[in-house]
Image 1 (spheres, helix red, strand yellow):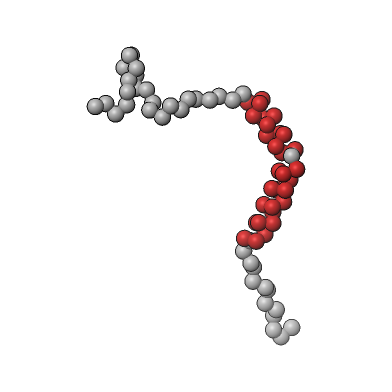
Image 2 (cartoon, one colour):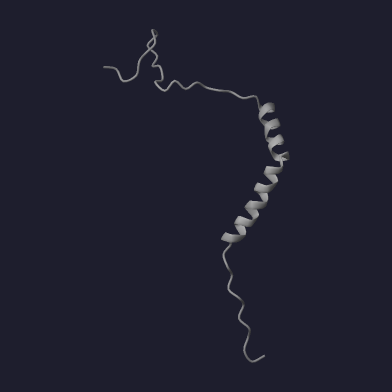
Length: 68
């Protein structure tokens, strides 16, 4: 039994049924621009800043010099 079926020319046919999809670059850029203009994007940027503050390493307090 053959693991992958072949078309009449002998070329293996993928079993997944997935097809290649191509997108136009101007359409993709327009979609990104629209998403960046959306209010939700601004909230995501603010959330990232706050999240990064939570995970920032704490620096130890500087020790004061004794005797001065």
